[in-house]
Structure formats: C-alpha cells, structure tokens
Image 1 (cartoon, helix red, strand yellow):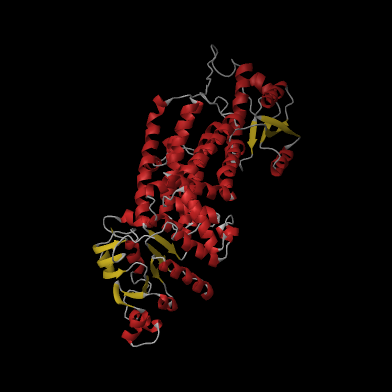
Image 2: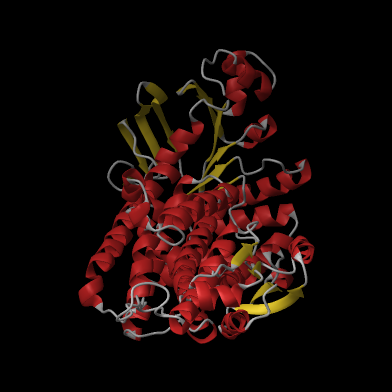
Length: 250
Length: 370
C-alpha cells in the first residue's frame, strides 16, 4: 500500500473557500494520519461538500494551504486525483455494465495495466464472494452488494486516501455494519478513510471526528473525547449541541 | 490513451445495451424520412375530380381529355346535377369539380370566349389553390392551341413558357429530403449525446469520472466518438433512402457530401454535449434538445419557410441555426451538383460552429460539474 507522505496524509491549514461574499469554508485546519478513519460531520449546508471537493481536486480553494497524499491542492490537483479514491451515496457504478466490466473500466481510467486489472479483479471478486456474479449486470445486484463493490472499486487503484461521501445513505443497519467491516479492513491495510455521514452511530466507529458548523470546524477529537468535552453520553447530543448554533442550514 | 479507449468501450456498451437508444438512432430517422418524403408532399397526383357536363359538346370533351391525361387529375364522378357535386364534396370523394355550362362548345366556337367553372374543396386550402391553378393552366393551354386567333389580336401568338430549373417536375421530395435530413441528424445526434452525459450526472458516475485522473477533453471526446460513428452510419442510411427510394439526384461529389455530413454531425454532437452540461436530468436534456432544436430548425432553417421572406430579426436569428447551412450544402451538392468552390462559406460557418461549441461545452463542463 502507498504510504506516500511521511506524517499526515491530509493536511489543511486555514483552508478557505468563498463564493462571492459567502464564505462556504472558513479557515479550517486539521491533519489526518495514514490509516486513520476520519469522520467529517456537519449539518447540510455547513460546508462539508465544499471542503471535500477542494481536497479531491475538484474545486480550487480561495486561500490557506492544503495537501493530500503529499500533493498541493492549489498546484497539483491533477496529481492528487491519481492517489485518491471516491465513493458517494449513489454507488457510482454503471448499472448496465457487468461487475467485471465496471471493474475493468475503473481500472482502465486510472491507467492500470490490463494484466494487473485481470489479476486484481480475480482477487477482488474472491474476497467479496462475487465470483459467480462476475458477468451479472450491476443493476440486478442487491443494494448491499452494489455498495461493497463500489467501495472496492474506489480502492482498486490502491489510493492513499479514500473519500466516502455519505456512503451508507438509504441502507439498512445490517448492511451498514457489514460495510464498516470493509472500511476497517481498508484502514488496517493503511488506507486513510475520510468519511461524511449523518448517522451518529457511524460517527462512533471513527477514530476521530470533526464537526463543521457554518464553514468552521467547531469540534475535533476522538468520539469519547468529544462526549466528555460536552458532558454528554452520545454523539447525537454532541452534534445537536453544536449544530443548533448554526446560521446556514439548508 | 488506454484510459480513453476504455472509456469509448464503456460508452459503446451503454449504447448497445439500451434498445431505446438504438431505436431513436436508427428507427426514428428512417421513419421520418420516409414519412416526409412520401406523405408530406404538396404535389398533386391523381386528384379526384367530379365532372358536371351540361354541354356535351366537343370542346368540353376535349378539355376533359386534357385534364385526365395530365396525370394530375383522375375522373371520379360523372355528376348529373349540382346536388350530386355537393354530395361528392360532402362525402370527401372529390377535391375538385369541373362544371361545363350548357352551350360551352358553341360559345367557344362562335363568341370566342366561354366559361368553365372550377369548384375546389377548400378545407385543404393549399391543395385547393394548386388544383385550381393546375386545371386553369391546362384549360388555358387548350384554348390557346385550338383557338389562337379568337383569344386576342391576330398575328404571331406569344406564349409564355415557364421553365423550371433543377426540379422541373416540382417534386416536393427535393425540398423535404434535405430539410428532413438536416433536422433528423441534428435531433438524433444532439439528443443522444445530451442524454448520455445527463445520465452520468443523474447516476452520480460523473462525479467519479471527475475525481478520476481523466481530463475533461477525453471525457467529452470519448462520449462523442461512438455517437459520431453511429450518426455517420445513420447519415448514410438517410442519404441512401433519399437517393434510391425518394429519387433525389446525387449530381455532386459523393466524397464532399460525406465529409460535409460528418462536419454537420460533429456540430450536432457538440451541441448535445453543451446542452447536457447544463441540464441536470435526462428529462431536461431530452426536452431541451427536442424543443430547443426542433422548432427553430423546422421554422428558421429555410426548411419549411423561405428565409428571404422572413422579417429581418428572424433572418438574423436564422444565421445561428446550423441546419440552415447544411440544407444549402445538401441541396447544392445533390441537386445542383455544386462543389466546395461555391459552398465554402457554409462549410466555414459549420467549422466555426463546431469549434465554438466544443470550447463552450468544455468550459461549461468544467464549471457546472465541479
């Protein structure tokens, strides 16, 4: 696995994004270590998506500094893309392509060699227990399988960081639990996991959690530390305590 | 390059696994061209006619012979009185009635002028006007031929002969087929590309593509390429239909015709990409390309209405319609046998449009999707 940078894999210093007079992301600073599962929380409209887009190289920041996998978000956005994986709530797979064709396509656009793609495809299908389904159209797979497949495809090119944008939205609790097993496995292999979620039980699974309110990071600690800091017993209460003070709520 | 090829391959899977795409791509053009070519003609062929002859003279018979041997009219009914004629019209049996009053032949011989009445079914006004014009022309030519000296001053008879260039038979297919071809190629190409990108936005796969190391340009070109090839096949089918089924001549260079068609398809495809970068859903993309392209192309391209007779503001707007130029090119090459020497202006405009649209689409893709 890639351990591109010594020290933090994601590093933000006063990273800011303004759209005209509106400051979507207001001087956020944090660092994420290799293999860490970093929960990125916030109400809708708090600026999570904008921050994530800047880190993925999709959106140019206004000021501050940030690097992902050792590359600068201002000047090396295209090189960042080679070293990150991405998965959203929409599963991001082509439903009219088979399992194998989807894997081959994503391997191809990340520039993997044909032989390597074949080899890794076999290994991946075996690990997921999907060998029998290799020529099945993704559209006809159950939701939980699609989700696991999408996650594995996001990791197919061995990225240093994987960005998960509400990956478990609309999924039942059992499937969500199984999905987290995959996340732990990936983190154990050294992949940094950057995840946004609205489920507070999932926030408990993270190594560390940051909570964004109105473009600023209002809290950042281990889940246990946060609960202690706000003197409450669940992450739900921590979140509500912070989010109630928000001005920009969708 | 490998990533790009992989992309094109993926795009081809989408196309061939979706029967609707193939139907739009190949079914619609063939159906529409045939429809426009055969059904929507304004020429007159064997129109049903009723004759009411109170005269029974030689000239009345001669005029009838002329009418029915022209190919434009067919005798449907021999009426005995006016109510018969009225009934035939009501039933829709006939489009035109020719009434010879009693004494028509003797008036013709002795007075030098005789009247014949033409009654047309004006519920279809265009056809009615054409029928009356055709019949009048035939009657007049008979009169000129049989009684040249009675119709005016004696001496050399001056006859105005209209000669029609390019389309002496006034075949409507000559106008409809190039127009339809321009319309169909534009709609099908633009619609399909606009849907394919909007679909990726809807399913969320576009985000993944943008986060990947693939650049925007290869994404756009990868999207366009399979449709480019298919639209080209499509264009050839429409051309073949035009030439072999609807008997449009191909007087100019076939190579030039094909190259111009490719250029036009490129314009249509980039237009589709531009629409799709701005449309959030497949439905929006489809409606925009259908309505936003269909009506202006139909009305302002010179397909249905002559551009010269439009008010100036509309003439100016029509300059933005790609089909306008392609129709001129098609007619120029196929019917008039012109070459690039005469058509370079239109060609240059299409080149400019393709380039401009591609730049716009690229800029738009960058801004809208990120």
